[in-house]
Length: 301
Ligand code: GLU
Ligand code: ZN
Image 1: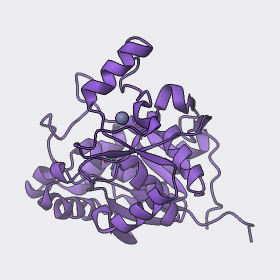
Image 2: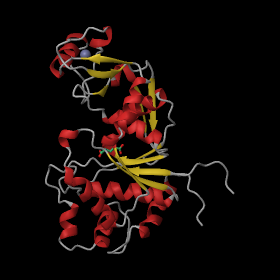
Image 3: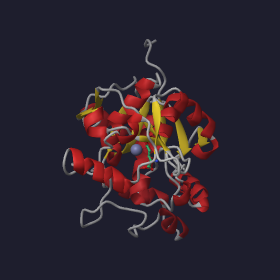
Image 4: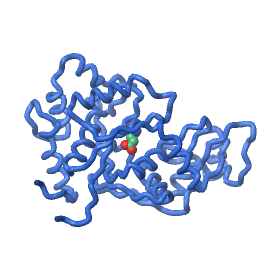
């Protein structure tokens, strides 16, 4: 018997904002092959807290798309049914209400440090002092610890260290419309669901240090992270639900063979597969990719 390595728990965490396209399917596939290649459990978690952007039909379409590709799951969760766990987590964090508008935040940044750098402006802590506008609904911000937090990626082998106050800032945990923020929900859910391995799109890599900071503050262990490249179109633009990327369900309903779609996804990763494959037949390709980066693989039975 090998000792002490806990069973792997992985997840695919789609936002049901529309129909899955090939890029979403590739991330779903890689999350699944990772869980299964390591003999782990695999969870499906719908991240639907941003209610205005959700489409009711997308839950079922996503399930059907996954089943069609042969990607199964052991348990399913929906974030909008778990608001009590996020509410509880917030009580364990050092937070304060904030009534600043986006425009006020930008003005405050310009007045202090000059122009905002990076994509997301860093909130300058205006409401830390406790003075809020009582006439506006308040968001809840996390008073981030004065620390630098580093994330490591087990697949790309990159490290990203961010000083929290300077580069992340006090970020919103609950929006002023009452919706819990994605960063909070993802951390609480991965923690409570015992997720050990997070396989997800590379667009979330920059958010990883702040999520690790939240995990620490909430005493959850940090999972292993594997960020996979986003699929791009022939122009090199990333596929987007809004950008007219062909939805998977169109292929499914058009009578396409799922094994051919899987092969297309696998070949887009440089895997030399036959023209038609099953999801299970892709496990060795993922194991080989993990071996290249010396990811600890369980002995094969
Ligand atoms: N719900 C997020 C998305 O669809 C993924 C979150 C995650 O995997 O951590 O982009
Ligand atoms: Zn504020």
